[in-house]
Amino acid sequence: MIRHAFMAIPLGALLLVVGSSLAWSAHDVSRKLLVGRVRPVPLAFLLTAAAAPLFAVWTAYDGMPAVQPGYALPAVASVLLNIAANLMFFAALRVAALSVIIPLLSLTPVFTALLGIPMLGEVPTPLQWLGIVLVVAGAFALNLPEGKAAWRWEPGAALMTAVALLWSLTVPLDKMSMARASAPFHATVLCGGVAAGVFVVLLWQRRLGELAGLRQVRGAFAFALVTSLLALGLQLLAIQQVWVGLMETLKRGIGNVSAVILGRAVFGEPVTLRKLLAVGLMAAGVGLILF
Image 1: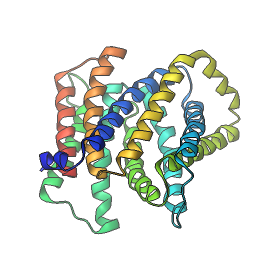
Image 2: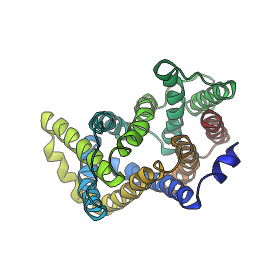
Image 3: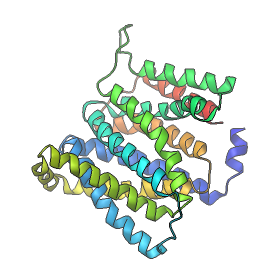
Protein backbone atom coordinates (compact mmCIF):
# COMPACT_ATOMS: atom_id res chain seq x y z
CA MET A 1 0.00 0.00 0.00
CA ILE A 2 2.79 2.43 0.90
CA ARG A 3 4.70 1.46 -2.24
CA HIS A 4 1.60 2.11 -4.34
CA ALA A 5 1.17 5.57 -2.76
CA PHE A 6 4.74 6.51 -3.64
CA MET A 7 4.41 5.21 -7.20
CA ALA A 8 1.12 7.03 -7.73
CA ILE A 9 2.58 10.54 -7.46
CA PRO A 10 4.86 12.29 -10.00
CA LEU A 11 8.58 12.44 -9.25
CA GLY A 12 8.45 16.24 -9.08
CA ALA A 13 5.80 16.15 -6.36
CA LEU A 14 7.75 13.55 -4.38
CA LEU A 15 10.87 15.73 -4.59
CA LEU A 16 8.84 18.65 -3.20
CA VAL A 17 7.77 16.52 -0.24
CA VAL A 18 11.30 15.26 0.49
CA GLY A 19 12.82 18.71 -0.02
CA SER A 20 10.33 20.27 2.38
CA SER A 21 10.96 17.53 4.97
CA LEU A 22 14.73 18.04 4.84
CA ALA A 23 14.30 21.82 5.02
CA TRP A 24 12.12 21.46 8.13
CA SER A 25 14.82 19.33 9.74
CA ALA A 26 17.48 21.97 9.01
CA HIS A 27 15.09 24.66 10.27
CA ASP A 28 14.60 22.78 13.54
CA VAL A 29 18.37 22.84 14.11
CA SER A 30 18.56 26.56 13.33
CA ARG A 31 15.71 27.32 15.72
CA LYS A 32 17.35 25.24 18.44
CA LEU A 33 20.57 27.23 17.96
CA LEU A 34 18.73 30.56 18.03
CA VAL A 35 16.44 29.89 20.96
CA GLY A 36 19.41 29.69 23.31
CA ARG A 37 20.31 33.30 22.41
CA VAL A 38 16.95 34.94 21.69
CA ARG A 39 13.82 34.42 23.78
CA PRO A 40 10.92 32.49 22.19
CA VAL A 41 8.37 35.28 21.64
CA PRO A 42 10.68 37.80 19.91
CA LEU A 43 12.23 34.96 17.89
CA ALA A 44 8.82 33.85 16.62
CA PHE A 45 8.07 37.44 15.59
CA LEU A 46 11.42 38.03 13.89
CA LEU A 47 11.28 34.86 11.78
CA THR A 48 7.70 35.33 10.57
CA ALA A 49 8.03 39.10 10.07
CA ALA A 50 11.16 38.60 7.95
CA ALA A 51 9.57 35.82 5.89
CA ALA A 52 6.31 37.65 5.06
CA PRO A 53 7.82 40.27 2.67
CA LEU A 54 9.80 37.58 0.84
CA PHE A 55 6.65 35.53 0.28
CA ALA A 56 4.96 38.77 -0.87
CA VAL A 57 7.66 39.13 -3.54
CA TRP A 58 6.92 35.55 -4.63
CA THR A 59 3.21 36.45 -4.79
CA ALA A 60 3.95 39.47 -6.98
CA TYR A 61 6.13 37.37 -9.29
CA ASP A 62 3.54 34.57 -9.45
CA GLY A 63 0.69 37.02 -10.00
CA MET A 64 -1.97 38.15 -7.56
CA PRO A 65 -4.57 35.35 -7.39
CA ALA A 66 -8.31 35.83 -7.53
CA VAL A 67 -9.12 35.07 -3.89
CA GLN A 68 -12.33 33.07 -3.85
CA PRO A 69 -15.13 33.32 -1.27
CA GLY A 70 -14.55 31.15 1.78
CA TYR A 71 -10.81 31.80 1.97
CA ALA A 72 -10.89 33.96 5.11
CA LEU A 73 -12.31 31.43 7.59
CA PRO A 74 -9.73 28.60 7.21
CA ALA A 75 -6.90 31.12 6.69
CA VAL A 76 -7.66 33.08 9.87
CA ALA A 77 -8.15 29.85 11.82
CA SER A 78 -4.73 28.61 10.63
CA VAL A 79 -3.09 31.93 11.59
CA LEU A 80 -4.54 31.85 15.12
CA LEU A 81 -3.55 28.21 15.68
CA ASN A 82 -0.07 28.88 14.31
CA ILE A 83 0.44 31.84 16.66
CA ALA A 84 -0.19 29.63 19.68
CA ALA A 85 1.74 26.67 18.21
CA ASN A 86 4.83 28.74 17.34
CA LEU A 87 5.04 30.32 20.79
CA MET A 88 4.75 26.92 22.48
CA PHE A 89 7.18 25.33 20.01
CA PHE A 90 9.96 27.79 20.80
CA ALA A 91 9.30 27.56 24.53
CA ALA A 92 9.60 23.75 24.37
CA LEU A 93 12.68 23.86 22.15
CA ARG A 94 14.40 26.16 24.62
CA VAL A 95 14.38 23.58 27.42
CA ALA A 96 14.43 20.20 25.65
CA ALA A 97 16.82 18.03 23.64
CA LEU A 98 16.19 18.15 19.89
CA SER A 99 16.24 14.34 19.62
CA VAL A 100 13.52 14.03 22.28
CA ILE A 101 11.24 16.93 21.44
CA ILE A 102 10.99 16.81 17.61
CA PRO A 103 9.86 13.14 17.41
CA LEU A 104 6.88 14.08 19.61
CA LEU A 105 5.48 15.90 16.58
CA SER A 106 4.67 12.39 15.30
CA LEU A 107 1.63 12.75 17.56
CA THR A 108 0.19 15.16 14.96
CA PRO A 109 -1.40 12.42 12.78
CA VAL A 110 -2.60 10.67 15.95
CA PHE A 111 -4.61 13.75 16.86
CA THR A 112 -5.80 14.09 13.26
CA ALA A 113 -7.14 10.52 13.34
CA LEU A 114 -8.79 10.93 16.75
CA LEU A 115 -10.35 14.31 15.92
CA GLY A 116 -11.83 12.77 12.79
CA ILE A 117 -14.16 10.62 14.90
CA PRO A 118 -16.33 13.41 16.41
CA MET A 119 -15.74 16.00 13.65
CA LEU A 120 -16.11 13.87 10.52
CA GLY A 121 -17.51 10.57 11.72
CA GLU A 122 -14.35 8.85 10.42
CA VAL A 123 -13.55 5.89 12.67
CA PRO A 124 -9.96 4.54 12.44
CA THR A 125 -9.45 1.06 11.02
CA PRO A 126 -7.86 -1.66 13.17
CA LEU A 127 -4.44 -0.97 11.57
CA GLN A 128 -4.84 2.75 12.29
CA TRP A 129 -5.68 2.00 15.92
CA LEU A 130 -2.50 -0.09 16.06
CA GLY A 131 -0.59 2.86 14.62
CA ILE A 132 -2.02 5.15 17.29
CA VAL A 133 -0.90 2.73 20.00
CA LEU A 134 2.62 2.54 18.52
CA VAL A 135 3.01 6.32 18.34
CA VAL A 136 1.77 6.82 21.89
CA ALA A 137 4.06 4.01 23.11
CA GLY A 138 6.99 5.65 21.36
CA ALA A 139 6.18 9.01 22.94
CA PHE A 140 6.09 7.43 26.40
CA ALA A 141 9.37 5.60 25.71
CA LEU A 142 11.06 8.88 24.73
CA ASN A 143 10.05 10.36 28.08
CA LEU A 144 11.28 7.43 30.18
CA PRO A 145 14.48 8.51 32.00
CA GLU A 146 17.60 6.46 31.35
CA GLY A 147 18.11 3.68 33.90
CA LYS A 148 14.76 4.27 35.60
CA ALA A 149 11.42 2.55 35.33
CA ALA A 150 9.31 5.53 36.43
CA TRP A 151 7.81 7.53 33.56
CA ARG A 152 7.77 11.33 33.64
CA TRP A 153 7.42 14.19 31.17
CA GLU A 154 10.75 15.42 29.83
CA PRO A 155 11.09 19.24 30.01
CA GLY A 156 9.03 20.77 27.21
CA ALA A 157 7.33 17.50 26.24
CA ALA A 158 3.86 18.57 27.35
CA LEU A 159 4.18 21.81 25.37
CA MET A 160 5.32 19.97 22.25
CA THR A 161 2.39 17.57 22.58
CA ALA A 162 0.09 20.60 22.54
CA VAL A 163 1.94 21.90 19.47
CA ALA A 164 1.29 18.57 17.71
CA LEU A 165 -2.43 18.93 18.51
CA LEU A 166 -2.60 22.45 17.05
CA TRP A 167 -0.58 21.57 13.96
CA SER A 168 -2.83 18.55 13.34
CA LEU A 169 -5.48 21.14 12.50
CA THR A 170 -3.40 23.68 10.55
CA VAL A 171 -2.29 21.55 7.56
CA PRO A 172 -5.86 20.69 6.45
CA LEU A 173 -6.82 24.35 6.98
CA ASP A 174 -3.89 25.44 4.80
CA LYS A 175 -4.96 23.07 2.03
CA MET A 176 -8.52 24.42 2.22
CA SER A 177 -7.17 27.97 2.02
CA MET A 178 -5.02 27.30 -1.03
CA ALA A 179 -7.99 25.81 -2.86
CA ARG A 180 -9.34 29.38 -2.80
CA ALA A 181 -6.09 31.31 -3.39
CA SER A 182 -2.44 30.46 -4.23
CA ALA A 183 0.47 29.01 -2.26
CA PRO A 184 2.62 32.19 -2.16
CA PHE A 185 -0.38 34.38 -1.30
CA HIS A 186 -1.42 32.11 1.56
CA ALA A 187 2.18 31.90 2.82
CA THR A 188 2.28 35.72 2.91
CA VAL A 189 -0.99 35.85 4.84
CA LEU A 190 0.15 33.09 7.20
CA CYS A 191 3.54 34.64 8.04
CA GLY A 192 2.17 38.18 8.17
CA GLY A 193 -0.74 37.15 10.38
CA VAL A 194 1.46 35.20 12.80
CA ALA A 195 3.97 38.09 12.96
CA ALA A 196 1.18 40.58 13.70
CA GLY A 197 -0.29 38.37 16.41
CA VAL A 198 3.06 37.77 18.11
CA PHE A 199 3.89 41.50 17.87
CA VAL A 200 0.70 42.24 19.82
CA VAL A 201 1.89 39.81 22.51
CA LEU A 202 5.27 41.57 22.69
CA LEU A 203 3.58 44.97 22.85
CA TRP A 204 1.17 43.85 25.55
CA GLN A 205 4.03 42.38 27.61
CA ARG A 206 6.21 45.49 26.99
CA ARG A 207 9.05 43.37 25.62
CA LEU A 208 9.83 45.10 22.33
CA GLY A 209 13.36 45.80 23.59
CA GLU A 210 14.12 42.07 23.37
CA LEU A 211 14.08 42.33 19.57
CA ALA A 212 17.54 43.88 19.79
CA GLY A 213 18.91 40.42 20.59
CA LEU A 214 18.90 39.71 16.83
CA ARG A 215 22.15 41.67 16.45
CA GLN A 216 24.02 38.88 18.27
CA VAL A 217 22.85 36.04 15.99
CA ARG A 218 22.66 37.48 12.47
CA GLY A 219 24.34 34.51 10.77
CA ALA A 220 22.20 31.89 12.49
CA PHE A 221 19.10 34.00 11.86
CA ALA A 222 19.85 34.23 8.12
CA PHE A 223 20.19 30.42 7.99
CA ALA A 224 16.91 30.01 9.89
CA LEU A 225 15.13 32.40 7.53
CA VAL A 226 16.33 30.58 4.40
CA THR A 227 15.37 27.16 5.76
CA SER A 228 12.00 28.55 6.87
CA LEU A 229 11.23 29.87 3.38
CA LEU A 230 12.22 26.58 1.77
CA ALA A 231 10.35 24.42 4.29
CA LEU A 232 7.04 26.30 4.23
CA GLY A 233 7.15 27.17 0.54
CA LEU A 234 7.88 23.61 -0.59
CA GLN A 235 5.30 22.19 1.83
CA LEU A 236 2.53 24.44 0.53
CA LEU A 237 3.40 23.51 -3.04
CA ALA A 238 3.57 19.82 -2.13
CA ILE A 239 0.19 19.57 -0.40
CA GLN A 240 -1.45 21.01 -3.51
CA GLN A 241 -0.30 17.90 -5.40
CA VAL A 242 -0.25 15.05 -2.85
CA TRP A 243 -2.34 13.78 0.02
CA VAL A 244 -1.74 15.54 3.32
CA GLY A 245 -1.23 12.08 4.83
CA LEU A 246 1.69 11.30 2.51
CA MET A 247 3.25 14.69 3.28
CA GLU A 248 2.98 14.14 7.02
CA THR A 249 4.31 10.57 6.83
CA LEU A 250 7.52 11.56 5.08
CA LYS A 251 7.89 14.80 7.01
CA ARG A 252 7.65 13.08 10.38
CA GLY A 253 9.72 10.07 9.34
CA ILE A 254 12.57 12.18 7.97
CA GLY A 255 12.22 14.61 10.87
CA ASN A 256 12.50 11.87 13.51
CA VAL A 257 15.64 10.35 12.02
CA SER A 258 17.20 13.76 11.39
CA ALA A 259 16.49 14.89 14.95
CA VAL A 260 18.47 11.97 16.36
CA ILE A 261 21.36 12.38 13.89
CA LEU A 262 21.56 16.18 14.06
CA GLY A 263 20.96 16.22 17.81
CA ARG A 264 24.08 14.11 18.17
CA ALA A 265 26.18 15.91 15.54
CA VAL A 266 25.32 19.50 16.45
CA PHE A 267 24.39 19.42 20.14
CA GLY A 268 26.18 16.29 21.39
CA GLU A 269 22.95 14.63 22.50
CA PRO A 270 23.29 10.92 23.34
CA VAL A 271 21.98 8.30 20.92
CA THR A 272 20.60 5.43 22.99
CA LEU A 273 18.96 2.17 21.99
CA ARG A 274 15.76 3.24 23.78
CA LYS A 275 15.67 6.49 21.84
CA LEU A 276 16.16 4.69 18.51
CA LEU A 277 13.46 2.13 19.31
CA ALA A 278 11.05 4.88 20.39
CA VAL A 279 11.61 6.85 17.17
CA GLY A 280 11.18 3.64 15.14
CA LEU A 281 7.89 2.86 16.89
CA MET A 282 6.57 6.35 16.19
CA ALA A 283 7.61 6.23 12.54
CA ALA A 284 5.92 2.84 12.05
CA GLY A 285 2.82 4.09 13.83
CA VAL A 286 2.57 7.20 11.65
CA GLY A 287 2.77 5.02 8.56
CA LEU A 288 -0.07 2.78 9.77
CA ILE A 289 -2.27 5.74 10.71
CA LEU A 290 -1.88 7.55 7.41
CA PHE A 291 -1.93 4.59 5.03
